Length: 138
Image 1 (cartoon, helix red, strand yellow):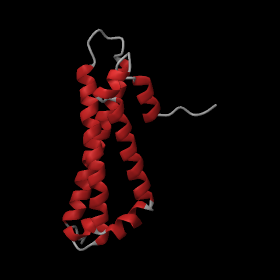
Image 2: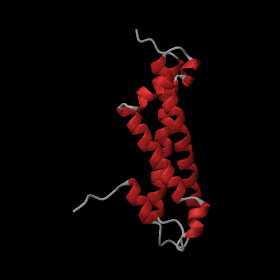
Image 3: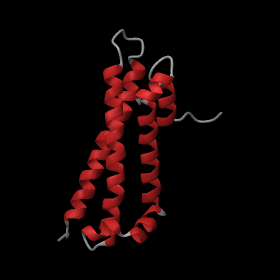
Image 4: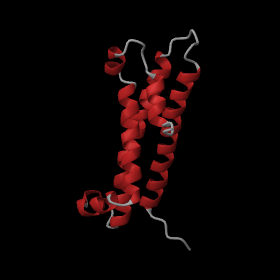
């Protein structure tokens, strides 16, 4: 019989929330791209992308700590095990978590009010699409 503890369920929960945030942020960017010429203003969709990116950033950070605690083992004290956190960050789990956090950060910055005020055309969908799905070099 498989022995599951609370940390295994927390990993499953944070991973599910990460997938939902990814779907929301990336899906929002693609909907902005496909509806770019639609007369409806895109403020609501931009806000949707921003909230999904913020949720992904927060849940992605929590997910790293939950995985570290699961590896560390002693329970809630494992959240503060910095040595185990550094070990986890040197593995592929750490690399994928760092890339996920960087991606959500870029989407969050691109959809922020400060960035939108600096750009003349509003949310730069093409730049965000290049971050999400980079084109191969020729």
